[in-house]
Image (cartoon, protein in one colour):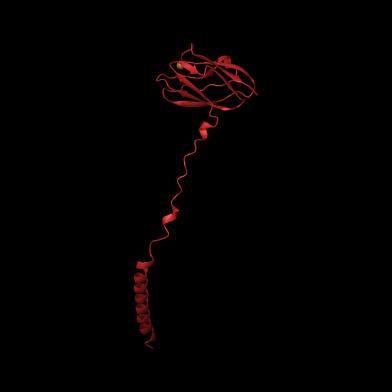
Length: 136
Ligand SMILES: [Cu+2]
């Protein structure tokens, strides 16, 4: 029976009409909805201001020369010189050592966990000296 070819063409037409219809209506229903998805620009919070502990090295000097901190805190060392420096615990007491901090670079180290007085120096320029006081 010649049924199927007939059906097929019907279907094809139907499909074509459907396509056309969606194409036509598609024009009017596109867009919109994109507007509010943009990420809100929250003001940059500088958490750093709330207690960033920092030693600055400038002109071959540690600033501050004596820094008092709590046990085990993270300390950032900011080398403002063009020469490399280190923050190295004297005599291994305290066990901290930043290693070489290149000029303009920063490094971090962890303060000793035990309260006490920890002198440190620069491994490259041994006359550079500072002190870390850990207070529990
Ligand atoms: Cu140095």
